[in-house]
Length: 177
Image 1 (tube, rainbow, N blue to C red):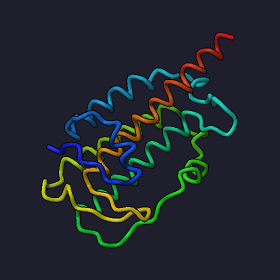
Image 2 (cartoon, rainbow, N blue to C red):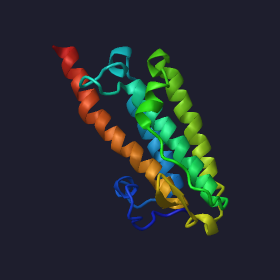
Image 3 (tube, one colour):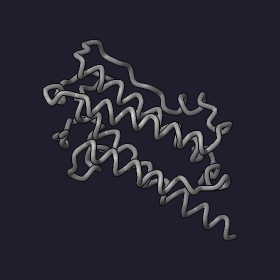
Image 4 (cartoon, rainbow, N blue to C red):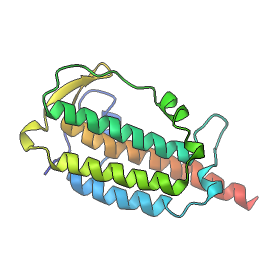
C-alpha cells in the first residue's frame, strides 16, 4: 500500500495536499472513474469552450493532464530504479501548443487518458515498498517516488476543480444565453 507522503517542501506539495488520506492505487482507481463520469458526456461545444481568451479548451486541458501524468510517472519510475541524473522541467504551454489537441476527437483523448492511467496504476502497483522514498531531481527540485504519485492525483484534482468552476458552469451559462 502506498500512503500519502509527508510534505516535500516543493511545489509538488500544492498538489499532494489536495489529496485526502488514501492509498495511492485506490485513489487512482476512484479518480479515474470520477473523471470519466464528469467528462465522458461532454459535447463538442463544451470541449471546445474557452472561458477566457488565451485559456486552454478542454481538449487542451486533457492533453495537459495526460502529458503531465506521463512525465511524473516516468520520473517516479526513474527514481524508483535509482536514476541519479537530474531531469529538466518542461514547458506545459509548449507541450499543449504542439499537441494539436484541437484536431483530436474528444473520445480519442478520453481513451488515451484511460490507457495512460492504466499504465500509471500498473507502474506504481509494481513498485516495491523499499523504493517509495527514493528521491531524484527534476526541474531543479528533489522529489520522491511516492510524492510524484500523489502529485499526479492532486494535479488532476486541481484541474478538475477548474473544469467544474470555469468551464462547465460557464459553458452551460453561455449555451443558455
